[in-house]
Image (tube, rainbow, N blue to C red; front, top):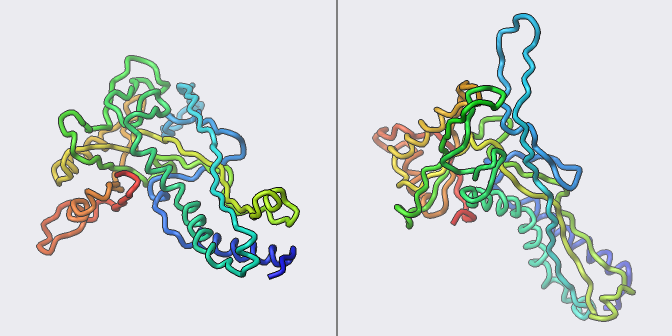
Length: 302
């Protein structure tokens, strides 16, 4: 095949179609536990974390309180995936061998938020959130006054004990019913495929190849720790009930109950069978927790 700019352009259109098709059709589950937050700068600062709006009877003037300031920021990261297409393969009309590569690139681009979101959940016991504690921790400070002052009471959203239960996989219970889910997926730039297809490009001259690549900009961070709970107790009805009860007891600064609704159970593959047994009604109707939460299983938690 005699190469021309038109042939290279048509080739790129085909590869972009392969990429886009996989990007559109790859299933993901990060949306079930994370809120997508648009970003227009290098990083976003979430100073409002820790503030839970509430209503009071309006008597006299509005009550305006200075909330404790939080400087929790998420800095966007750059991500890329690239391939080379040999000029000789184009000349020999062997371009079809690259089709799976571009499809896999599209799949990887679509699945990347899953990897980030569930990877962050897995790292939640060692990664700080807005209050300066690890997201899953035993000593989150909750203050007696709504403005974040007074002697704090320490609250736990973790029942993970790797020393006592080193071989037990960790499962997670979330409240995803709110406008803000427990995880924040900050999206600066969605994946896009570009290519260097000029016949006079340096890579064509030096390496006899055309370069194609996809890139995106995003990152993840934590929302409210009060909407999450982690445990490596055996996933039984009793331990599931204890986790739900602990979450429902969480209060905001000032002592107001948060009305937590645990509705999403997140597990690694090792616990999928136990989770299904817990959440699906048995034939005798004896499972009291059937339908109490949506099950999300992720291999990124393994």
